[in-house]
Length: 297
Ligand SMILES: NC(=O)c1ccc[n+]([C@@H]2O[C@H](COP(=O)([O-])OP(=O)(O)OC[C@H]3O[C@@H](n4cnc5c(N)ncnc54)[C@H](OP(=O)(O)O)[C@@H]3O)[C@@H](O)[C@H]2O)c1
Image (cartoon, rainbow, N blue to C red):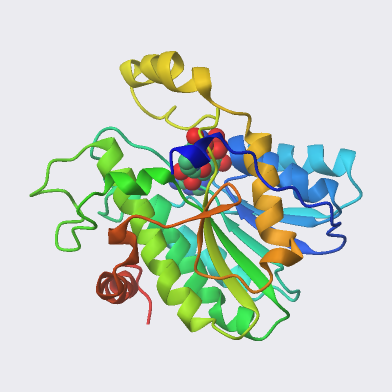
């Protein structure tokens, strides 16, 4: 894992004309660079955001530079009702989704709850992605081959003991930003186990990746001390989001990955996730709990 942190991604030179890429959180950082990369190769973009002005700005910028279609849906991933609404609209889309990139995410240093009463990192980073995938499962089965990608993190390894399914609110375990973020990313990897089983043999693949240590707006929702140390220690060695975008393009488009599913990549290098992210029983239990928490049947 440490050796892989220094690697550059494989590059993919294939075009992606007239394909549709759905991406969440493309208003800044990795999502923005990735939407640009796909648009530069001819793909149409449908992004999902919580900020309308930034969404319009993204589409205007992309369409002024590339001959593509760009539309967006609005959803705050900290609001379950918004995610259900966006998921319904997406599943009714009369066009195949070629690549779905779950990129939106937050890092929260203080234990915070959403209006739905769930811990913020869990809901935004994990549960909203689960709901979108759940709604879209029929659409994916009935359309041409497609790829689902999770922008995950090596930080899933901070959930050393795995997910506390009976204490997702961190009432009986000491909360830290790293632990809650690691737990949410672990949850996403556990959902990947079940999703890749579900889609096995259908042409739909599901993979996850670590985008590198990247200089983005990540963590700007936190207090001044966190931001000071992030600027001082983390951002100094951080890469540009274009590196992650190249990796996400390769994972979404390269023929080399056509039959690869259920894998975790550091950029484009396959890696073994931490043991708690491979726990089949936890994956099963999380799936059932997510249906309940997400208000799904
Ligand atoms: N940067 C890194 O070093 C790094 C490392 C490992 C993994 N990652 C992962 O990479 C992904 C992208 O993060 P980034 O580093 O590019 O950070 P970023 O610049 O902060 O981008 C995060 C994106 O997620 C959106 N978002 C945040 N909360 C949301 C919510 N409640 N509802 C809807 N959208 C929301 C943001 O929208 P707004 O513009 O409205 O805020 C933004 O578009 C995340 O999943 C993160 O966990 C990043």
